[in-house]
Image 1 (spheres, rainbow, N blue to C red):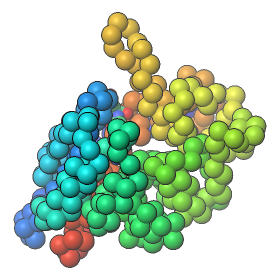
Image 2: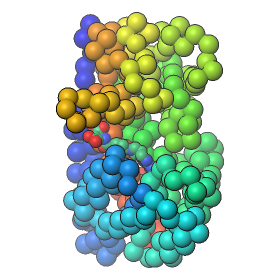
Image 3: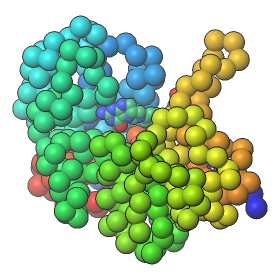
Amino acid sequence: MTAAIIDGKAAAAALREQIATEVARLRETDDLQPGLAVVLVGEDPASQVYVRNKGRQTVEAGMLSHTHRLRDDTSETELLALVADLNADPTVHGILVQLPLPPQIDEQRVICAIDPAKDVDGFHPLNAGALANGDPGALAPCTPVGCLLLLREQFDNDLAGQHALVIGRSNIVGKPMAQLLLQESCTVTIAHSRTRDLPALCRHADIVVAAVGRPGMVRGDWLKPGAVVIDVGINRLPGEGDKARLVGDVAFAEAREVAGAITPVPGGVGPMTIACLLRNTVVAACRQAAVASRLA
Ligand SMILES: Nc1nc(=O)c2c([nH]1)NC[C@@H]1CN(c3ccc(C(=O)N[C@@H](CCC(=O)O)C(=O)O)cc3)C=[N+]21
């Protein structure tokens, strides 16, 4: 069996189209233009590309984009002051502080300083708790939501009873992914670096979400034939010349021979993450303006 390739790029473009339509309507009928502020501390080249893509797609969707680039030696106090300004700015409905932050800054303190209503990353403990409680109003993290949208498409909106294995337990992907899948009535297993016999566990899974950051870790012979594989990994390996090559956490060529469907890297989960960020920003803007949204 050769797996179907899940086209995240196309799914993200379709989602951005819907978002742009909704933004146009909000600007026309409610005089509301959703605004997203992105904060980048330091010069990490991968982050720069990501920040640029986000900025461009925000504008293409008809939204306001504010980008703040701070020096690598920015103090925690300075960053907290900027977050306070953005919290108070009525033209900013969503705030994203790019992670990781340099070592002199306490990430958790910064995340907690963001107004939960503007926390479009869904990283604030209030949003994480709301998600765990099954509160439909929670702003949920963009990468796992993007994965869920791709999975729903594969399963015709019915994930109930599927055995889902989430590999990775981060607050950004693994934990919220597990919460979302549980909400869909999957049977969820979370695996991590201390899990015993991961290959055997994996062979039972109808759905595998790999989010560990280890290139090619999930092998073809770990998969149940026909499983749906979502590869969250974005690993930069040295490629031809000075070009970096992007690879996922799944050994793609092998997995493709066994899986039923699989996301590629690039062009899988990544573009969906950005589309979901735009969506969260529209939802957050509507709530802040007490206007009904047709997206949520
Ligand atoms: N506060 C915060 N929120 C995040 O959501 C966040 C973050 N910090 N820090 C970094 C990671 C990484 N991340 C990516 C999202 C999309 C692509 C993406 O669109 N990738 C494209 C191609 C990228 C390329 O070619 O360079 C793809 O996979 O097809 C990549 C990486 C969000 N993150």
